[in-house]
Image 1: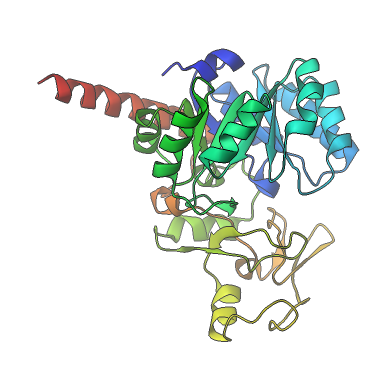
Image 2: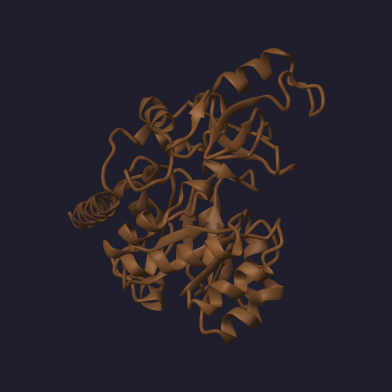
Length: 331
């Protein structure tokens, strides 16, 4: 199960917990890292003080490497400076050009990952000095820039970037998916939806229950939940907000039913219909009508398990699958 990516970061397993916005937590990132994978924090919308606290809390829980994800659709210079001051090992950029930050990150001794939707963008990223490419297929949950499925995208990206490690993202939730990614030439898998069904993920119990009941047809790729992040397509569970909007003829922003309506609150924070948000454990209200991020792998998510157990199960199954396939080819 060793790969170049693992060597770069001194981790044991080619399994990365996708940052997943508001669902990430120090407990989740640390649990994944302690199990031999790479945990990730999503700090794009945290205050500077909160970002520093989350990094330090994660370090209290693990002495293993972990990473931080920053969304470049929003100003991140100050958060990046804090990450580098705190000696975060991997900085992952999303939804923007990482080139302006390369020298700063490398000078601090950290590695740079960036998420791409195409082989052409992967080549540009490598030319700019990016160390790790995340090839995100259309099946992925949360915000998704591209429209190519994971299987053809990963193979195209691997061929485009040569020796630069590629992580496969989108539609992977188990060991069979990891084995498939490795067979495509990926150095590992970037896994989100499966980790939502762990006690360490900072999401509401109702959200988790809906994930467990969903099958592979339960998600939709849409631009509906655009409050606070416009023009950013995403994949979510179908819910009443989506179905009512669809029944109304898919009206554009400004003419949608219930715009601005407060559906829930979370620690004093109002959560509105069509808002890009994640309901936390203490949220109250119509949680099921909010943006419930999930990828098409959600049908493989059938039980809540500790994050460390999820990592170990994925790794064990992938090893068994690859061994079985290898044995079969030798017959």
